[in-house]
Length: 118
Image (cartoon, rainbow, N blue to C red):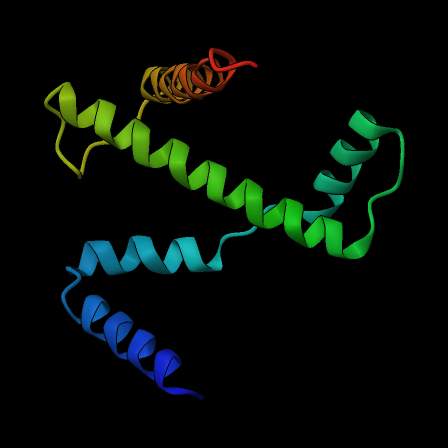
């Protein structure tokens, strides 16, 4: 390991040591979670009409996991805005609102780039 990796690892250990037991449980669930490769493969084939390469499935699973993480994080913010505590469940309405906010944010970014055409 080089110096940068050691520093990163030390920072991660420091961060994890400050987690509450509930935060640590959430983090462990996140680390263990994965999207089933068979479902991702079927989805990829449905959308593109081609078989995904093995490395493509790995990338698709990683991006999917990041998206789900962002969606849950945004849904948690929506729930917090409604006055729910971290111990309360995220409801379907929170996820729908989070999805809408993520989508509208993406549209704003897309429009920002479209305004500057040459």
